[in-house]
Image (cartoon, rainbow over all chains, first blue to last red; front, side, top):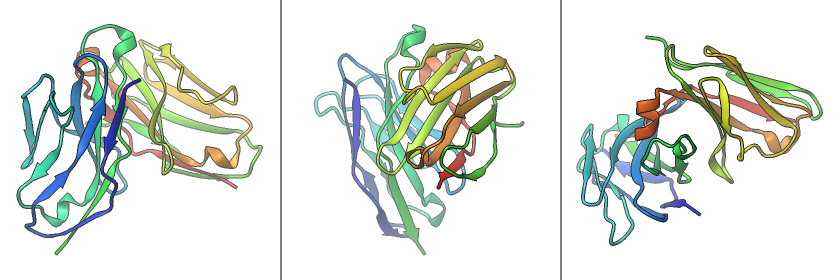
Length: 116
Length: 116
């Protein structure tokens, strides 16, 4: 079946440090890939996405590139801020409009703590 | 704009009691999803609806769990009888069909359930 594996946290960084969160997936075919972020006390919200190989998703200084050859979608940010402290979830979904396909499969989440 | 509204935010109950979680999706959204988040299993999709009709309930753990969507603006997730292993954060999410097809869901803040 489909699955998403993320690096375990917590990841603790200092402000302005470089952040990488690894994400790999197992799936048949070519899914769309996503990063969602969950700030403390809030629900998840979409951070960025990529729908095909070599696509790069970006938002709020975060980037992730869809790598089909390594089945990966690692999240990166060059200079983190305290406000980036959150839990980050990698997820996949098959494209298409079949109702049965409208499911996101999430990784376990990676907690990131940025200290001033 | 109001987002997805869930209630209660926190619920503490004793084993064997009935628990009802409520969700009001974003007005106009035609997809509604119930997710459960635990430390052990991460974020799991329990059930989702399209136009108030359950499409996939394969994630519902057992017969103690039931979900309904009597109209486009309200859904419930019921656990009867509750057990300590049901302790988790339950998220409701909604989306439009075109956004759900692209993987963009809008999450509520979650209902944290503790079963003693």
